[in-house]
Amino acid sequence: MAGSLPIVGASIQLYAAGSAGNGSAATSLLMNVLTTDATGAYTVPAGYFCPMPSSQLYVIASGGQVGGAASNAAIMLTTTLGMCNQIAVSSQFVVNEVTTVASVWALAQFLSIGGNVGAASTNAQGLANAVATVAGLVNLTTGTAPVAGFSAAGKSPAPRINSLANLLHACTISSTACGTLFPATTTNGGTVPSNTLDAALDLALNAGDNVTELYTQSTANAFFTPALTSAPADWTLFINYTGAGMSSPDSVAIDGVGNVWVSSYSSAVSEFSPTGVPLYPNGLTSGGLLDSRAVAVDAQNNAWIANEDSVGVNNNLGSITVLNSSGQLISGATGYVTGGLYYPIAIAIDSNATSWVLNFGNSSLTLLSSSGQALSGAAGYTSPKLVFPVAIALDANHNGWVANNSGGTVTKVAPDGSQFTDYACCNGAAGIAIDQRGYVWVANYYGDSVSQLANDGTVVSSGYNDNGASIQNPQGIAIDGSGHVWVANFRGPSLTELAGSASTSPGQILSPAVGYASDAAMLEASAVAIDASGNIWVPDFGNDTLTEIIGLATPVKTPQLGPVQVP
Image (cartoon, rainbow, N blue to C red; front, side):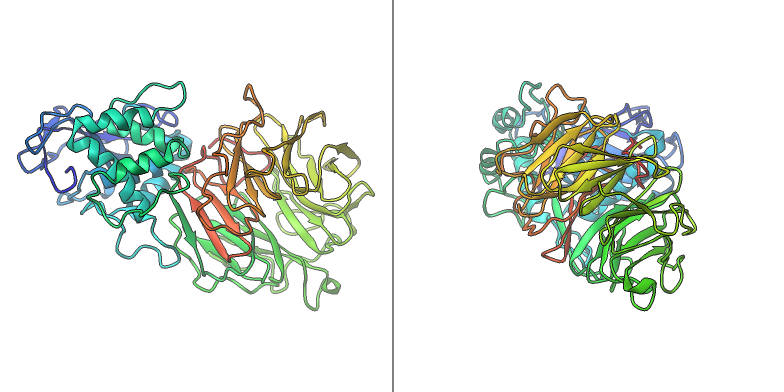
């Protein structure tokens, strides 16, 4: 369908997503391409063979005629269907502009030009979660947004979806409109798209381009409602979630199935499904959770939470609470309290199952085994080089890198605590991350900038910045699967994307001038995490919310153990 009009004579193909990498070649499942009838309908015959029962299926409709117009070769629309073994014989789906927008934005990191959807065989979960996101954004049976029963914790981005669908609609009903759509969605120096699907993909991956012009185009044939009533800041799709016990949320981590864990300073821990459904309506509050400052997830999908305070244990100096994937306590009623914990403020888990806990109270490190036993002695590792430490990341050699909020340094710590090495690099280091190549990235809270160091401590840059246009008191920092750097700005209402260490211009600002999602009403973005579908999750300390930005980053392996990895 093109809006309410049937697309007659469109070519239909059913595909199974590829498994050789992101955007890899899909498998055609129909021996003969189908053609839509006078009502836009078609029937997929029984007998097609899926590569695997769990293969993700999708449909592409190409070309065809709308109303009395001539055949339009620029039409290319799509929808996802789900896993092969879960599609019933009687299933019915609508393919239109709305399903195309939802599919493209949710699958942006798995989609390549020409309509190929694919993921690495090791990231079937990330692809499945992205397909589930499509079904949460649009009713696949009616081709409309919002979906009835959308997560009660969030608000559907249906107005943006419908405005984008209206943008494509103008081109589907008249090839003349494609002449303005395609140039406006062309990436700088890139190939001009030749169909609506490729144009949508270009826009999803470059959501800050030509926003006002494209919004104006979307109003010319505004069939789908509700739609935006003014131009957005960019074309990102975002959802703000509330509830689930979140109160001053401070940290976020993703587990191996895509569930999102959020720790709140006001003590509750929240867990959301990959589609934003709260798994515990009021959050989790037992096991010594108190003034929770950080969360990390281990290889068994257990969540480790650093509590800055404790009551009646460890002299009220804090504890570590560990919850399994079902929210059950592993660490006992009071949490782990060994190893010199002293106001623990940050935590990271290594690939060897060691948990590194950073203590703000006495500037020390506590290393714990998977069962909570102290590996760093009764008092932890200490050094005068640690000065108001607030964040920690782990490299491939099991060293800890500590961001010192005072002193202008980061400190590299040997896994046995035998060596502490300072590197002068920064201005109020508040967040730290390590990329696939071993480069260290630091969010400079006071410097409104991001520093980069090589793994040997060589300072590549003491501060990439955009003069405060978007990088404002950065705190959270994460690396995506392409090595791009994502920064959550605690005093700026947006996310900033920077080119990574493998780029010809490391540190180059890739996001719009004011950052991405500047109209998501973020107040105090405190952290950032990326999942295996390419979604970005940002807890907002000031608004008691969790913001999901759909499909904007390259997927990463979750949970993150040590430096970031490709799934």
